[in-house]
Amino acid sequence: MSTNLAIDDALLEEATRIGGHRTKKATVTEALQEYIQRRKQTKIIELFGTIDIDPAYDYKKQRHRRRSK
Image (tube, rainbow, N blue to C red; front, top):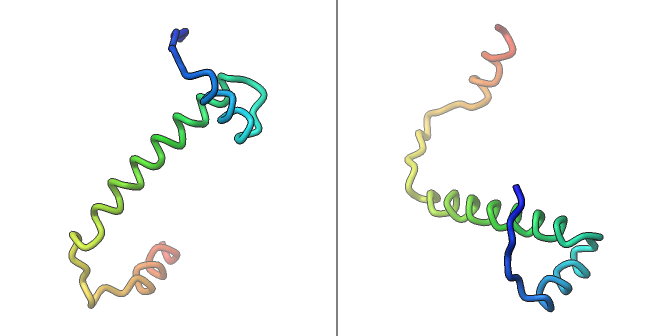
């Protein structure tokens, strides 16, 4: 899909240089991937402390059970 965007030239040049990319497309693609990854990580971090953990759960027992099947 072709899209026209007005991106700050200085910002794009710096990102291309720092990222070591050869093309503007590669720079923007990686920037978008990092943006998405950071947003997903933020949502995961927000879950910390909100999920109850069963202290009796034995993960080693569950791991052994899967291998036996």
